[in-house]
Length: 112
Length: 111
Figure 1 (cartoon, helix red, strand yellow):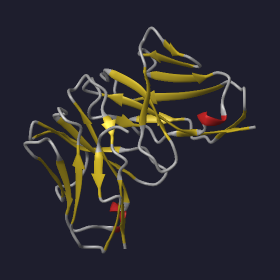
Figure 2 (spheres, rainbow over the protein chains, first blue to last red; figure 1 turned 180 degrees about the vertical axis):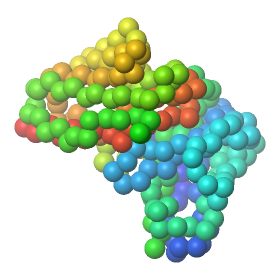
Figure 3 (cartoon, rainbow over the protein chains, first blue to last red; figure 1 turned 180 degrees about the horizontal axis):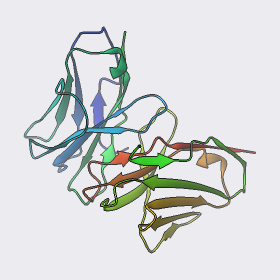
């Protein structure tokens, strides 16, 4: 077990709706990254949070947003869901940039 | 062009075989390199880091060629438990963050 917990594990939403995914990282891990993994593809970097500030963003539109809380847990919010947003969303946390990042088990989002 | 490209696979090999995976990356400024393993419907897990000098971990050997922007993974004496998808990963900024993943190569080891 990595100690990184994501919720929910599975979710079905309708196109146009909004969704919030949650990630609880290991104690002491101040860096959290979010990734989107479509079927048959590798994970794609969405953004990273370090000590509650966004610290880098991949090629995702603004309707993908996030938060990191003082306890370093994190949320990923997606507005105006599209069918192509259907994917496995992975959270990874680490105690620092040069220390292994551990992935949670992911949230599988299906948009219908 | 994708930032990280891998052999598409799948690779179907018998137990005991040696198998090699290749990967190229487009950003010459990339600073850190890894191989991750992902089992079906599970999260990726770090298999090993990759260094220019080459590194070995048991049956696994990884190699980096910065001049050619090429990364390889060699698995010797394949086991049934090696069946998984192997993801080539680079970090443009260094460290383990903001990782750029390849699409992965699926390996199936059969008896």
